[in-house]
Length: 239
Image (cartoon, rainbow, N blue to C red; front, side, top):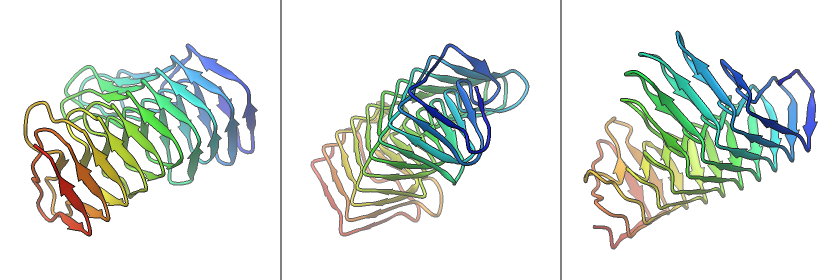
């Protein structure tokens, strides 16, 4: 579905579709998508990048939608992003369930944002998503901003490099909780890193920036951070 500028979609189902980007819906600026189910779509490309297995959002609003079991996949050295939703900085996503989506590659490239990549998320459930590839990151989300979201049970970290995650619960994610980015008043609880190493992962000089956060009961976690910062945080009962 190509939703042009100022389009409105409501109470629709987009399923079993395929495109290079925006497997279910490609939404241009000022589009509103409300009370829709977007499921089992895929964005694939054999010769370049692909974005947005469920929705590619250039701007506008996605409200009270279910984004379920979508896939973005590319071949060889290219990258894929946003298994459920790929959005630019003007995309506003609120009160949505984003579950069971995947961003992956079939070669040596990287998949990022198994659930979402980019955009702004409010009161969303981002759960059970995953990434694949040699440099995969952000099973729940990559980039973007998150406010009062529940980010649980994603694979290859809950969040990677968000502009800001605020008042979020990041719980039960596999292969790390967070990687890079800024976190304020977040609860980072019960995440695991199967291979041992870092729950809070950082390999860059900017590091993770944590303010007023609760970091408890994470497994195989130690602070491995270059240039990281934690202020007014409680860090307890991690093993």
